[in-house]
Length: 229
Image 1 (cartoon, rainbow, N blue to C red):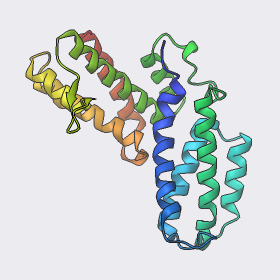
Image 2 (image 1 turned 180 degrees about the vertical axis):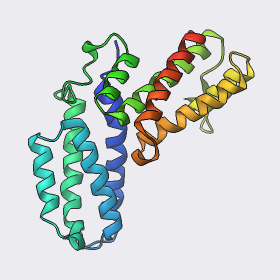
Image 3 (image 1 turned 135 degrees about the horizontal axis):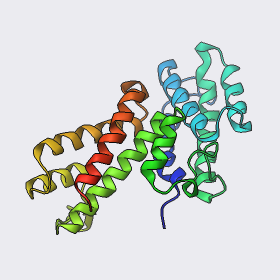
C-alpha cells in the first residue's frame, strides 16, 4: 500500500518547523515570549504560515485564524505570534497523522493519479512547485533503493551502536556508480536532483524556480526509464 502522499510531502517540513519551535520554546525568554529576537520570530512565522497555507489553502479557518493572530502583532512584537504558529503546526501534524486530513485542496489525493510522478506533474501544473519537488525527490530516492536491491547492493550499514541503519541516499548513489549500474555523469545528475529536493524539503523555496522543477521532473522520468528497477 502506498503511503499517504500528504504525510510524505508535508510532514517532514512540518516536523522540521516544530523542532525550530521547540528550540525557541527552550530559549531564554519571558512569559510573553519577548526574549525571542525579531529575525528568529520572523523566520519561524514565515515558514510556519507557508506550511499551513500549502496544506490547508488560503480559505481554511485555521489559516485565517493564524494569519489574524500574526497581523495583530506589530513588526517589533512578532514574538507574540510564535506560540500561536507553533501550536497550529502541532495541531496540523496531529491531524495529518490521524488521517482526518486527506487532501491539499484535492490536489494530492493518491486515488486521483496512477503514480507519484503523475501526481508531481499535476502539482507543478497547478503552481505547487515546492511539494512537487519533494515528491519527485522521494520517487528518485525510492528508485535508487530498489536499484540497489535489484543489483545486490546493501542499502543498510552497521552503526556505531551495532544496529543496522539505512544508508543515506548519497551513499546509495555512490555505490550504484561504483557497481557500474550507471555512469558518473548520471551520478552527478542524481546529486544535483537530490540537492534541489533537499532545498524544497527544508523550506529554501527561493533557491529554485518552477522551471527547474519541471526540468527535474522530466530528467528523473528519463532516468527511471533508462535504469528500470
